Structure formats: structure tokens, C-alpha cells
Length: 225
Image 1 (tube, rainbow, N blue to C red):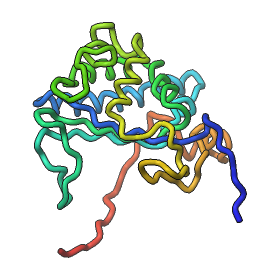
Image 2: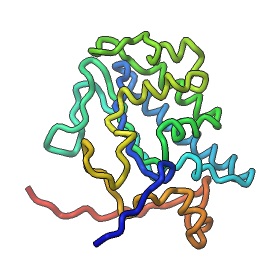
Image 3: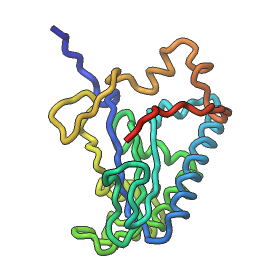
Image 4: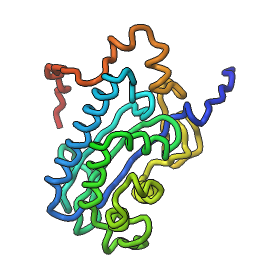
């Protein structure tokens, strides 16, 4: 019989799964903004590394994915409906597994002016009009955040904006039962900071950006339908 292990709040992993409504026709700009955010994240890591600090321990991101899809288009490559946008809008899908509390995870990125600029740019691409139960000019809206000078100066409003479009439950921890989805890993409670601080040769095995990789093509299964 297994022995229960208590995982502290700061050591828990949670799921972010956003479906952000975008202005129709702004998909290319959204992809560019996502690429900018990724580049800004890499640059912030390099800057921190130059100062002897590893920001990955603060942000606690295990992995993330950003995907943009046009209004009315099917998710390519699968025979069943996938991601869908609100009618008349494009959609930006963002998925991440992160350590600790939701607000701490988001606010950790505010230390980089480049990332903040990218998040502010995303606010300009959002379209919250016509969505039932959403006030497009309310206190937690993208329009309000823009009007009040950005995400960093309106952190709580930004957290609430993201949560409104987040399928992920910031209370359901990885490995916990009884939630609206099954969410697990082989290593519940193993934070990014613990990996870096305790794994032998972590600095050489998992070097900070900038780091160049090559990816030879993997082989797809030979499937016939």
C-alpha cells in the first residue's frame, strides 16, 4: 500500500489551457506575436544567465505550446473536430504546465520588458465583442488593460482575463483526482527548480538559452486507413 505524500502548493504542477479570441484576419500578427514572445523568453533567459541567475526556476515552465487557428477552419491533420474559434473570430490556443500558483507563474514573466511588450501586443489583437457574459470594455478586458497602460500595471486584471479563457483549473494539481480532467505525470511535485538544483550536471545537460539544436526527422508510423 502506497504512503501518502503531501505536495506543497509551491511544488504543485498545474495546467494552463487558453483559448484566446482574436480579431478575425489578425492570425498572421498573432503568430508573429507568439514567435516574438518565444524569442523574448529566450533573450530573457540569456540576459539572466549573464547575471548568474537561472529564470527557469522562477517561471517554473515544464513545457508550452502556442497554436493559432483561423475562424471556421478545421484543425489540420485529424478527421474529427479539434480546436474551434468563436464564430467571427480567430483563436490562439496556449497550453503550458507550470509550477506553483497561477499568479506567481504569470508575474514571473513581468521581469522581462520584451515579454511584457509581447503580452501588451497580444491585448491589441484580442476581440471580446459579442461573446455572451463578456464585457469587452469591463475591468478585466483587454481593452481596459490597454487603456490603463498594459498588463504589468494591471496584473490582477490580466490574471482574471486569462482565467476567463482558461480551460485549465489552477486548483487541480497534477496527480490529484476528482477534477474536470485527468492530469498526471510520472513525477508530481518535481518542480523545475528541484530538477536544476538537484540533478547532477543539470547545467550541462539542460543549458540555458541561447542554445542551438538540430532535429533530424523522426519516423512516422506507417498507418493505412
